Length: 350
Image (cartoon, rainbow, N blue to C red):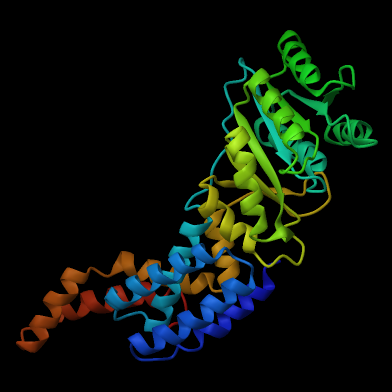
């Protein structure tokens, strides 16, 4: 998972780690390699350009903390920008109180794993929030799609509403009525996979959304499709005003283009990732954790954060002036040692 881009970024950092100072020259060399790594990972070119520019601007203007190596501080800058690209923070589902019905609609291309994801999401919500969930089978076109959802519902321990098995809009409408009458608090609708260029099918899912007025409209995308996923999501968003994204097959040999591109292109958060075919193979998407995993340098990132907490830049400048004027006292020395110990104790970066 993302091994390729992790290796490429690690190789790129070799141009700057170990150097005594961050210079325009070594930043330029490092960023050139990072740019290649991101493009090879199939990240949207405008996203790559903005990322490179923001890292360059911040790195050249950054004051180097004395207790942290410049290369490590550069890694922290890259990490912060990666987190920003991936969405800054974890985005929770918009779940209403249990005495009110929450409606979630899933939409996406054919073959994106939407039906399986519907059951996975139900299983996760049931486990985390102990909610009474009803799945709705609105994929009346794919052979055995309804039977598949019923089987997955049994595994997840949730009920499946099939309706007349003919009219997706009527099925969705009847499901809402059934859910309210039977005290369900969460309704998850599995719609048919459709091509974004199929206007008739896109209009159909739009009508379903207008009929049931979902609280969440989640676009399900195959992570292996790269930056193309962002373009397709943008088209779905024009019809549905999606509220979030689920990336499936994140455990595969994905290059990462979808994860990096989708949030920046459509401005909608990635909320979940599929990590296996099992019913519990879905995880909440944490941008900071994914960024750390991509860099393979979580400890370095944490070290810089620790140093920033411990070291007061203004205080450091005062101490520097004292040393120059030969006014540095024993008490000043102890304060400096104490701060240094706090940083060093966090990792072996002496």
